[in-house]
Length: 212
Image 1 (spheres, one colour):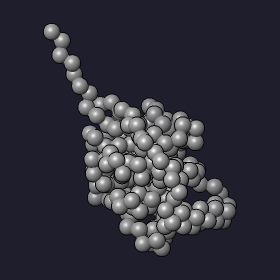
Image 2 (cartoon, one colour):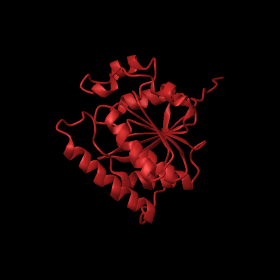
Image 3 (spheres, helix red, strand yellow):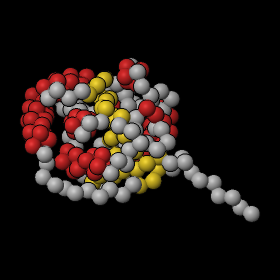
Image 4 (cartoon, rainbow, N blue to C red):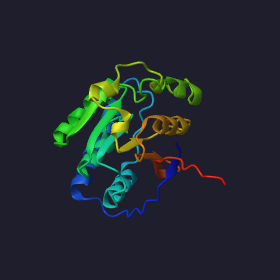
């Protein structure tokens, strides 16, 4: 099933006060977290959260999603999942690094945001061949074997209406392929890249044309 790009009419307005205050605190905690670690966590690079929030806001305002369940793949500090929660999505996050999950839970608790974070791989069971085919072994967080995150959540990838990811260079294809294989028809994939910015794609059914 192909993924089609969904145009977004994004109005980059001034951030609401609660969002601005949340992002300020999140940035402080992220910088402190990085500074306090002797060894840098492989694959942890914070996204640019403001344009992602504006994209989420536009998605919600225009009712582009088929429902309100949201999952952040490779959630890191969980900031995007929490931004989605501020927009009243039902939110979840999957992260391979336990210390980041603990930090995410503390931040969500302090802001009274109902987001469920679990430690595990975003790769669904059975998706390993896709990763092996499309991704370098340098991306160790995609090859790590951990408890099944979806079992911990009591959900499957096709239960989410919106999935967000911030892929590193070289990960874009594998993220899209996993989404195409496991997400529900109609679900939206929101990604962010420092060069291309935000991108929204929808999983659709390929229409077969009759030939006479």
